[in-house]
Length: 256
Image (tube, one colour):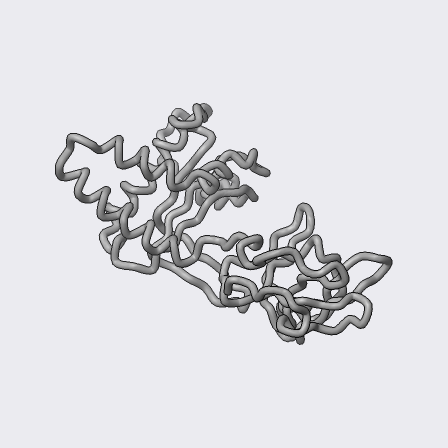
C-alpha cells in the first residue's frame, strides 16, 4: 500500500518504476566440494537433490556446524575446464554459505568415505530409502575410485641415490598453485637449479586469443595432479641437469 495515496499496488508494478526493487543475482566467492559422477545414478533429479541434501545434513550434524553456514546445490552447476569448455549435468555441490569462506567443507573432502558410511547408517530401517541410498553410494564410490587424487609418495619406491633427485618428467601435466590463488594445470618443460633451489619451467594454459606462456616457478608450487596417468617422476642429475636412466643409476624403478 502506498503510504501517501493509500492505493494498493502490486510489487511487480512497483518494480517497473523503481529499479532498486528489481531482482538481482548475487555473486560471492567461497569454497566447497563439487562431485561429478558422469553416470546414470543421478538421472532422476529427485535422487540427486535428495542425496545432496542428506549428505549436507549428515555433514553438519557430524561436525556440529550450524546448518545456515552450509548449503547444497543439485541444479544449474557448471564446471569450466582449463581449455574453456564446460561440464553440466550430474553434479552436486556442497559449499560454505559465507563470503570468503571459512573452509568448513574441507572436512567433507578429507573424510568423504566416513560421511558416506554415516549416510548409510542414517537410512537403516527404511527399506525403500536404504535400497536407493546404497545404490547411489556404491556408484559414487566406484566412480570416485577412478579420479581420487594419487599420493605422490606412492609413485616413488625409495630414496634416490645421494647425487640424484626425483623430478617430474618433461611433458608431465601437473598442478601449479601459489598461496591465495586457484590451482591451474600446467605442463612441465624442464627442471633446473636456481639459487640452490629446484625450479621448473612450465607452460601455462593460453588465454583466449593468446599462445601458452612459459615461466619459471619454484618446485614447491608444483604438485601432482589428480590424473595419475598425466604425470610421472624420473631420476635427474642436478649437476649436469640431465635425466638419468633408472638402470644406469642402479636405483629400483618406481611402482608405476
